[in-house]
Length: 244
Ligand code: FES
Image (cartoon, rainbow, N blue to C red; front, side, top):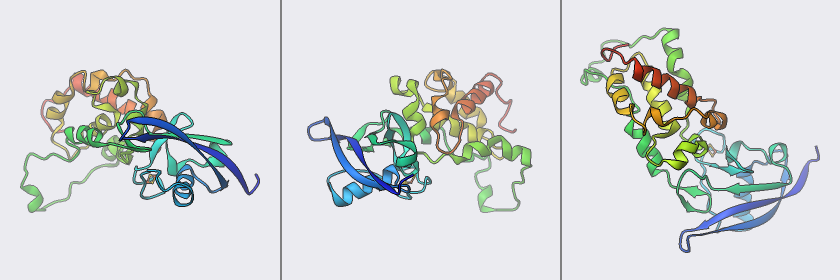
């Protein structure tokens, strides 16, 4: 592979004042280390300071840089141009979230849905955390029940890829539902019954048509489609009380 090469980067931009989308083309020399994000940062620094992008960690941890790259929802910081994109890189804002400007989307609805499933450990004795008399010991098997679902970085790519989320704005979506399962499956949690009752709706688990697009695009290997099917099983066979 040659050391560097010039590629075309076509960015679909959105102007909130005119509510118009336009496509702007940039040419940039890239090398084998250049990611879509580093290319966009270079364009912003050297060619066009008006380009709006959002990012933070640049290493696939913060979940800020989601966008559609050559037709697929991707993290821009984890998409290598020479290895994965070819000579033309088409970049668009995510489709499943309202666009604020250029490649920056509004995540208010996304985080409201995440919060609605109570993504924290619920305990009946709310004062116990102030006493700290014991550890909450778990076996490896109990840990395995929920560990794969803890890797979510809330990038929103799963929601972007989900056809149901794109057609039904009321649907909780794969991210919120997988995080509901993450806590319901945790042996320390005592909020399963209430969460499951709240999700026994078409906006909850029954909206999922098990197409699996969410799981295919997750950059962290989380499997929201599996989590939702496991949730459906628990909705059908709910725990008699909130203990596991
Ligand atoms: Fe943090 Fe890409 S900048 S995940």
